[in-house]
Image 1 (cartoon, rainbow, N blue to C red):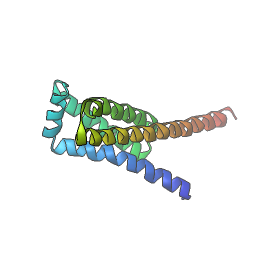
Image 2 (cartoon, one colour):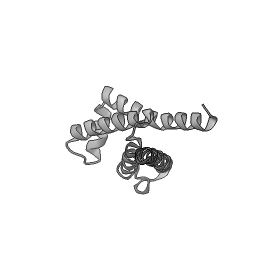
Image 3 (tube, rainbow, N blue to C red):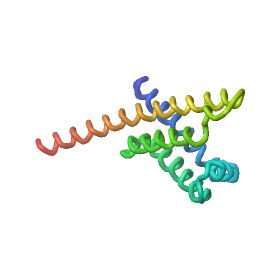
Image 4 (cartoon, helix red, strand yellow):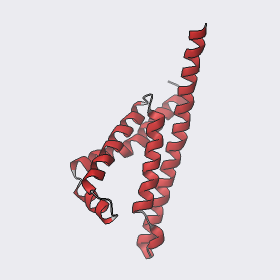
Length: 140
């Protein structure tokens, strides 16, 4: 496997691991997440917890495995990550050390969303090439 392909697979798995582990953690101990969801005004919190677990595990696994829906999974996870920022990392409403921490977490999530968007575009390009190749074979 070429270094470029190896790096791509490892990078994709690394991004996916954040969501897979997050989903597993929420599945095992969701009480803290429920409290944060309630604090953010998301009710019924238990429904949002299960939707989050499903998204993180389902889209995370699709991304890790590089399935045909990996592009859609990456887009969904990018949107989820940015929504998480808006709801849970409101650094602009805080002061002092906690504001600095939340600012760092906010822009960490922006970077993750950027990586997911880049990955989605690469996955979509690969999918389009595959479809075009199949069309060319069919027309021959």
